[in-house]
Amino acid sequence: MDSGISHEDFRLTTGHTCRLLRIRRDLIPDYYLLIFPKASGEPNPAEVTEMLSLGISRAQQLALEKVGDRGAFSVLYSGYSGRREAGWHIHIVLLTGRWKKAWLYLVLAGKNMLQALGVRKDDAPRVRV
Image 1 (cartoon, rainbow, N blue to C red):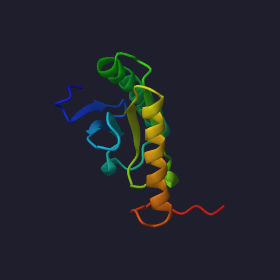
Image 2: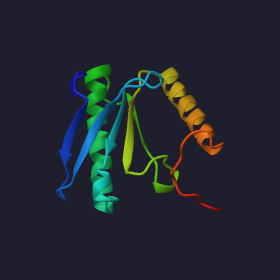
Image 3: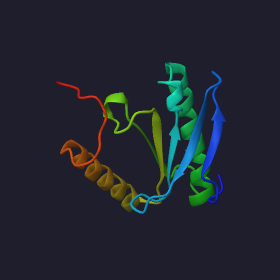
Image 4: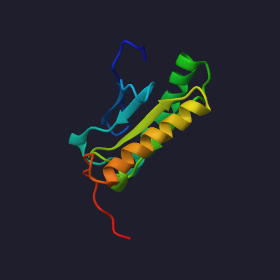
């Protein structure tokens, strides 16, 4: 994926298409989302597995191209009850060291804190323990 391209599409074995999007945010650089189309509903277990495998493979390629290290990335998946927005997706963030990883977790903690306090939009279902 060239830095000038904003997305890349992949056809799953089921025929559904998923899309890798480059997310341009100041707080989290080198950030991508691999999304399953909302119109297709929730992916079946085989599609989840295929997308996770595809996401890891693509993350390795991006990390090698952009950082020079196939292992310089994190992949994050939140289940239905833990995500902020409807629609299945995984996060891919390229990392160049401990400080970038620490920064990523700090930003994620802040976002989740705001959602827990009701300050930031959150349409995930409430799970009672």
